[in-house]
Image (cartoon, rainbow, N blue to C red):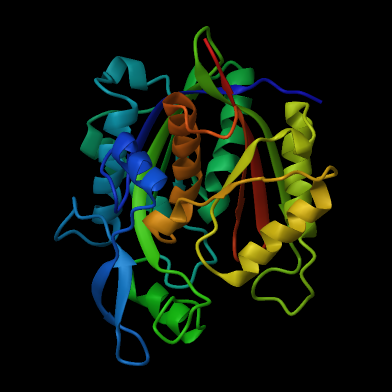
Length: 341
């Protein structure tokens, strides 16, 4: 079953390695990272390293999230006027509600403050999607519904997130999930913001989202169940089916993997469960090695990298399998395809 594709019309990205999509994606390609010590110490007395965004010095909390998002939106939607934006829904992707140490006022204040900073008012269909790393695929699905229902001709998807927050860092440290001198099975935290302007396909070269898949993994990272990657496999198969493809048809993968063995094992198991033909390579790219684990940012970083790779000619092919996973069990996959002029 094929569905109406979504076209990526504009991209904005703010990360620790670049304050624009072009700069960030160039850093992803070169595998540049920029970790620096935070003002927090782990349980062993070592300074916690993180991938912080330098363009927002002195800001913290919601103000920091809003400032990063403003820059991303202005890049994705340059020169936007109030008259243009009133008909564009903004789907704001933020941290999942289950995240330990989550800021209490994310759902109530970020969307309003972001519009105030931009001095723009978006469609009444605007909404907050608090789904962490799977937020962007969820927003893609909602965007497709809005376009098909005729409620919008374009949708702005915005993600802003940061794990550089002491309650979150403290929990991750106590759970042994941070990458430290004594723990190789962990990740560095990060932050950033991104924006995607999506609409219906038009003539010319463009990146399309041709399929979406969703599932729940019962054997999530905090469970004691044996991991078989059934949830991620189901999400991948769903995205491929919507795109009218087999999983074997994808040329390479871009994912939200950030360093933990659990998620690399899950990706490997899902590959074994969904690919039917042996192949010499099936590249796995993961921009979080440059941005750090940055939550809701993951989906936009993935889409931005897929578009840059296709346009710059270093992609492994036009068809990209993207997949993301939340700690609590939600899994999502996107089928991305670059259509030439």
